[in-house]
Length: 255
Image (cartoon, rainbow, N blue to C red; front, top):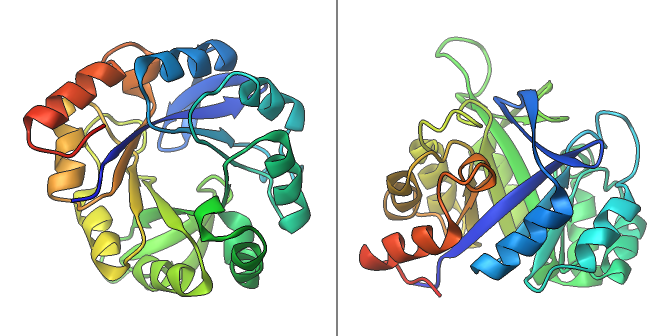
């Protein structure tokens, strides 16, 4: 088994780290600079920074917010939110960002994945996929892709989109269950496993972590290559070192 990564996520709104449930009811969590420094010290494998309202507000990523974190981080750093083209990606990479993450722009213009992969290389490109479960007989895919911070339905089958994303050149998939997000009731293991088994590129599980066991389940049952979490780390419920020790004791290959 490849080494599993532990990834805290900074959802940014108005320059602050926030966290909600099902992508809504956001509350202030902590200062992003303080959080980034702390996660680097604590041994996080990577850090994800999402300017979560950039696309909804029809604006670019706030580069000044990103730069303050770039000046602090000592681990691989991924940025998403408000990225519409390769020029936006270039600006972030020039700041020192290791990977860029696209979501809505990828759905709207799938060829952007291929263009970015060719220009920057697969290892620099993460495609984020937000998904939700629809009831049977609803007329929409059982697992559907949603965009614009979960506000817009697409009618796209999530598994088929994941396969297309891989074919177009994505280096990894950041998969978030809107239904599980912020609930602390556990990752959507069925969704995670379905995507992980449909593609060969790494799949990062996101949305729903509340316990150490949830992290383990995302890997052992969901077949995720990495686990991303926010609430449990931001509010001090679980420390990075604690998560790594627990998973290592469970036989997971952790740094």
